[in-house]
Length: 172
Length: 289
Image (cartoon, rainbow over all chains, first blue to last red; front, side):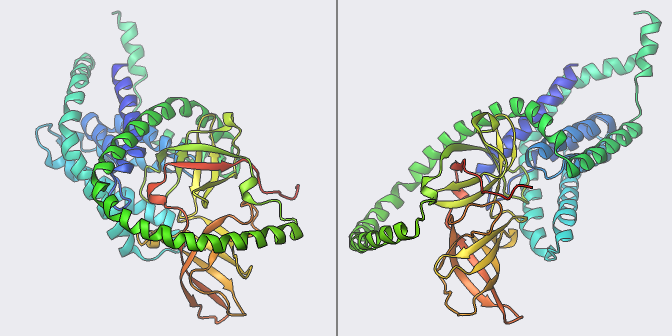
């Protein structure tokens, strides 16, 4: 229960910050993607299931407020969360390299999918422009934010990870 | 705990693969439903509106206060220099104003003649604050803090500072989403004010960095349209009220078909620093279906 509340709070806080504070702190119109960070982090820290659920609700929130159809972003975010969950086994909290790589890959996948489905299919063919001006800056900004955010996430996660371990023992 | 309870718990353990499958199915169904009807959007937007909007409201007001203070400090120098400039402009403008007053007198006479009493200055408007912008970097829609509780419905026009911002495309009880005209998937039917030639104004992500958007399909057989001309919303648009200022032509070429012209225009609204907007409560009259 505690875990679910923390998950919900993280998603809501990330969404609110992303659509307000980080929009005013954006560089030439490009802001970071905190929801991808939340989705990926919950994915590789707690496994596929958590990643899937967090991704689904993050995407759904974006869909409700900014989407054209409900479920589009939910689908993208959900699969990103699921894929990150697959790296749960090789994840160690002390090592920051894997999270950074995973988050940047996740963000670029998100960017590429959005470009292909929302822009390429409307015959916007200048891929290099969109890559250099939207996708790449977003990744860089997101990574910079992640470096500062990661210790905080780690502390929050450790707090309820311990509870998780205890309940995991019960199953064994 | 008794073993029965434990077994029950294990029964609920759903493998992640199936969870993914179920949620994927759910997403596809939702996409299908929202694509054809707007049934789901309504209920969900009510629920989430009450959770998210207060957060956004709070953060935005704090954020605006901080950014205003920091901007004030940084701009002090600029302001001093500007003051000199402005003094010069005041003099120029005084001259211009006298000219304009004469023209206005003339205009009033003409308006009476044409009975153009539906100028957009007379529409009923409601002010709204922007509390959130699109969380992604691809589109430029934003959320305002007024919704259906304040009488806002879909397709109402949104203006700011005398220029067109966009239209309401999604409404919740205490929030509404505004799709701006610079959005990459937005098209507005426009008209050159001076010559009444119609054209299509469409947003473009590629041009956005240079502060312009593009227009197309301008038929200007008399060759009278020139750079700097005003573009307003046209009379034939089915969503936008006529005569709202969109922007000024900044660049224009003849298309390769030699019939139409296309180019770029500077919007009348400064989309970078938009904080408050006005929603026109008058809807464009439509033919009943």
